[in-house]
Length: 345
Image (cartoon, rainbow, N blue to C red):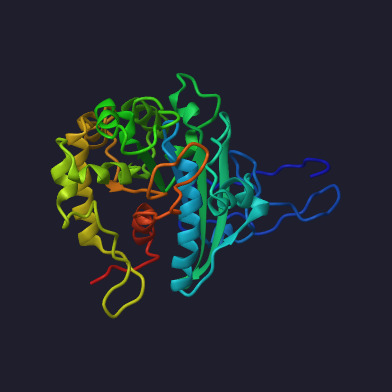
């Protein structure tokens, strides 16, 4: 690090079969062991990353969609879920660009709302999930400021969106004026509402380029829509149905087995959220995902979530505490796709 010697290894074009860079190299000037780093951002990487399975997840959305809050709540619930997989979740501070305790977890525990992610900075968090199914696992999270996705020309290099395993796009229904009007006096007035979701999604898809990440279109703050069940609104019948997946938590355990993924329930949820988006005048979002302009149809699914279970009141979280709803669903989907958790029969 003192002499800033850098050595880059790439897979030879004529190489066939498995390939990995040398596990250890030494500086030719001082003899000190060199630190492995990303070839794009130059940030340090764990020594065993080449032999591990790294799940990379990016959260995207307009301002005030709750990306940072979602990360904080997901982290608390994910810790319990990993324990049920007979492993542990550990924050790798050396390889992260964020202070997890200060910027995410502490805010939830003290009941304060989150400060927005600063523009021009994609907060990075790396977690070790230990050994799961006989393989070392890591989870990398990227938190992108809404301003960077709303800007015509972002100051931040967002090419990592195309290399992620999963991009969670948060869609805020309160950005739709008809929904705001219907919820008048039912929930506290929102401090800020970001740009129209379809414009932000267009930016996200553009930065993905020819990449093939899984795409989770997530209807956020669904607790607000659940309040419409007893009111006169075009989508009220959706939430008045007690059998809908939009009103009940996901199943994470089989009758006799441990943690797993309920594929049938997940597909049902996806279809119900898709239909609800179309009722919310979100047909253009559905079309952009299912029929993208560049022809690159990504593996995708629709989700719904509420990180808090209620609207924040000014600078404070809901007075009854947080009651999250389906916060882990997108992560469980990619974990299942990566072979970390089995299907629930």
